[in-house]
Length: 256
Image (cartoon, rainbow, N blue to C red; front, side, top):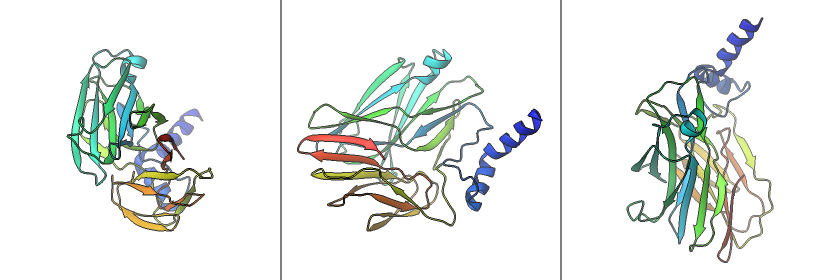
């Protein structure tokens, strides 16, 4: 009986079955990670901002060193523009258990804009595990104290010991659109939301009355205007926004 349950569990958790479940709308999966595999480092899509006097701070844990006692592990960060154009890699050999990186326009080749980045853990060792980095990103406006938010939606993965990275592993419906309603009533001077397409297809997105498309890996910053509520509709199972509330020079950043 235990073996039968184990086989059924493996069948339900592999990537091909997840695609079929999503197509049929039966127990849909938020991601397409094959949980019968191993030695995988999965990453959320983290947002960076260097526009309009913003800076971004990323604080992360060296998961392989801290939890698996692998001292020769390394961390790779990969940066993309909001149009999913590659900007740069940033490799950190044998980082400390806890590390922090300042992402400003100098770090990003004098780019003043916004986009996404991913973080992957690397080692030559094979491990019977799958890890996900969903650490904290902070946003500072005019050098004020940053507002911190943890990771949002798992979007990419790679093997610990391979260079190849699989982007667009977010789950989506083939037929039915879903609406994500942010549980808040918005009354600050300015509210913006940032979205990234975590899937491997182009999706149509509706934010309140605004309609636009997002290609794979592309991100968009949207001004909500005078709306008190935020509704996001698409075929993505978890198109969860990062929200920027601003009053004067004070900001409050969080995910939906």
